[in-house]
Image (tube, rainbow, N blue to C red; front, top):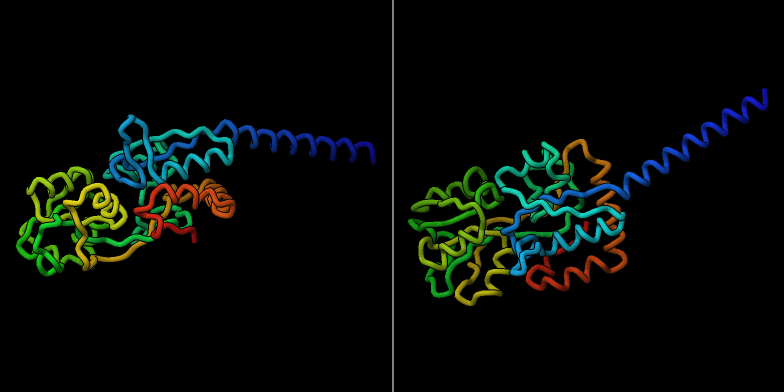
Length: 260
């Protein structure tokens, strides 16, 4: 009887070891598909050399390095981000993604950046307050927090005072249109606005703001295990100083970055 019990326990131990080895192997062989907007500097963008860069991309690569995962960058159409996630084409949406208003639509990581919605204008513009936008042409990227703030959020009344709110596929095109004189202003995240103004003195940020928000990494609602693993990795990267070392490369947004 004892011999049979020992054999049974041994078998259970072997099965457990195989299962653990299988899980470990799966981790090592796992390819993490990072979904991001490639026109959202300085969080994620296409660099001049044809590679992808930005704070989000750098941090995601470090998470993959932490676990030994293969990193796969997957630039997406921001309008179709949830479809891309739900289809399995990407494992997360990690690209200056606003949590507020979408709390129940995704499994969210901890907050890693604070953000404010602002108005970007030309440096020689005589616009000073939000009220001055009455009768003006204002641009915004489609399906962003600024877009929703103006169309169905707290700033609908302001939007109704515009001559027109024009929607663009990305902020790069919107800003280029602003510089060319095609529109009077762009509703945009302050972190992105800081990036553009640091690169071009012909642009400035209006003092009055549209609203405040926070950024997180969005996973499929039921994919909490992967979410928890990413949180654990960033916890470690925050404690060992890697998070801050990456942040130091992005002075335009460093003051907004956090891990809470």
